Length: 305
Figure 1 (cartoon, helix red, strand yellow):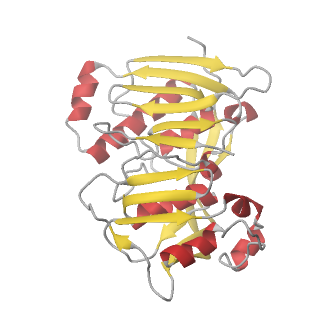
Figure 2: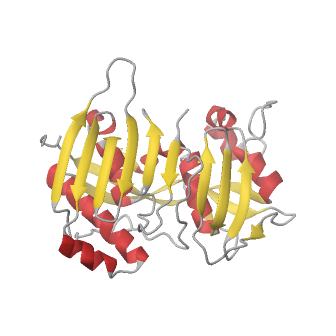
Figure 3: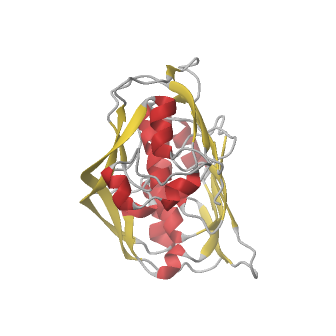
C-alpha cells in the first residue's frame, strides 16, 4: 500500500502539491496517502493553468541529477522537499516531476516514453541568494507559482521536455451537499495554517481546509477530477474514515451509475463514497466536463552529474 508523508512547512512556502513528501515506491501519485503531518491548505489553487504557456522568470542556480536503481526487490523510497533555498528529490520519475511542476495528476498526463514513468532519479537543485531574496518578497501564492516555473525550467533544460496543453471532456465528480445538509463544522482556528493528514488505513484528518482544497485532495484519491459545487464557504475541520481496498476494487462503470451505492458489500468498512455521505453530509455525483490535460511531446534522459 502506498504511503505519503507531507511534512509541516512552517516558514516554507507551499508549492501547491510540492511539499515534503515521503512515499514507498513504486507509487501512483493519485493514490498516495499522507500520514500524520501537516501541509498548508490554500483557499484557491495557485496553479499555472494547463493551456497557458509559462515562461520561467527564474531558474535554479546549480542542479544535480543522478539516476537511482533499486537492488533486487528493494524499492526506492520517494522523498521530495521544496525548501526555502533548494529543491531536493530522491526516487522520483520524470513524470512525477512533471506532475509537481505543472500541478497536474498522473491521469492528466499522456504521451512520453515508458522510462519517464519508471526510471528513478535523485535531484538536488539550489537557489542563488539573489533569486532567494526576490522570492522572499513575494506573497505565498506568487512564490508557489515561481517555484513551479523554476521546476518547469529544470525539466526543459535538463530533460529537454516539450509539452502541449489541451482540454478534454472526461468523467468528473461534482462534490455536493447531501439532501440532509452538511455534517461538518467550521474550523475552530480559521486564521491558522490548515492541512490534511491521511494514512493508508483510510483515514484523513482535515484542519482548516476550504472545500476546493478538499475537492483537490479527493481528485488524487479517486484519480478523477473532483469539482467543488458545495457552495460551502470558509475553512472546515473534520475527520473521514473509509476502506481504501473497496475504492480500488470498484468498477468504473458502477461508480458512474451510482457512486454512493456501487461498491460491493464488505464487512471492513464503507467506501469513500458512502463515508462522505454518512460522516460528512457530502456526496459525489458523476458528471462529465472539461479537464485540462498535459501531453508529453518529447523528453530526453538527463545527462548524469
